Length: 340
Ligand code: FBP
Image 1: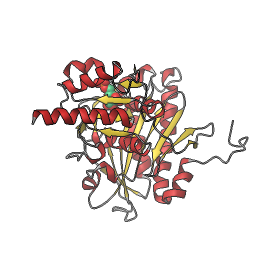
Image 2: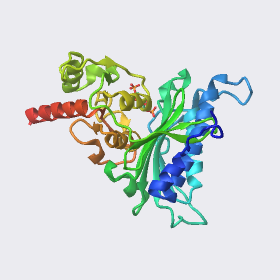
Image 3: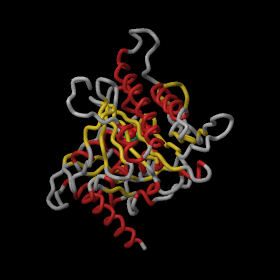
Image 4: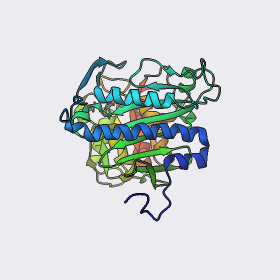
């Protein structure tokens, strides 16, 4: 159904944010929405490969990013597009991306635009291992206020985020976001606009799924193995659990937001400080989780209060329904006390 036929007043994400947080932040969401719709189109048509000329967008771009990972062509496409469109906004002073070593600062008229009050931090395309196999991937973003220099602004605790969210490129493209007053979802419609489809979203108190790469379980700290074992054994209030793991953080988180349960990426021998990145993976999802009544920890501490020392810092992540996350936090804390 197109907007012309719709009898309901459709609200775009830009209108929603403008009405609640002003034109500046609305412009930032507008830039993210335009980028997301072009990324969505590129992903949707990627399977056509080179049929229509122009080469395939699948595969490696031939470069390695600051994480030491092979950049995928779609990573580079998404990164360049977000950087370009956010750079055109007079309200954005700089961006920080998973794909770039340092911040990219924007100049308007030969210097920083004094009206530029935001820095946007993002993972342009999360779930790289799933890009070429047509499985859901996403874009994750966090918006912080510029206070002093860019790095100092983005290294503030996650509690300081002005806004956060993600776009899931799945059967439908959905943007889930918060500006600090609850969680809303916007779905890409046939007129290529992200229109409001859910508001005041709540994560169930406890859910039927746990989500983790159990192939790593052998190198998790014991307390995480015991925790997952306890879930499977029905020890958490008798709740039965199924296992779900897509391997794209955005997709695994989105299911957890809607159905409840817990997603875990514990420390491993290979990644003792965790695999996932604090600023552009964990912080934004933790803000969404908390705003929807869920929770997020790095094991023992509230994730949003964990401080980053560097823009590409990694962290263990346990996120989801309050019941499971609180139970895990208590177990890790107890283990830490026993060690002391
Ligand atoms: P990037 O693709 O942005 O590097 O994200 C990391 C990620 O792919 C997450 O989306 C996902 O949760 C995790 O890594 C999967 O890791 P693993 O393959 O070790 O299970």
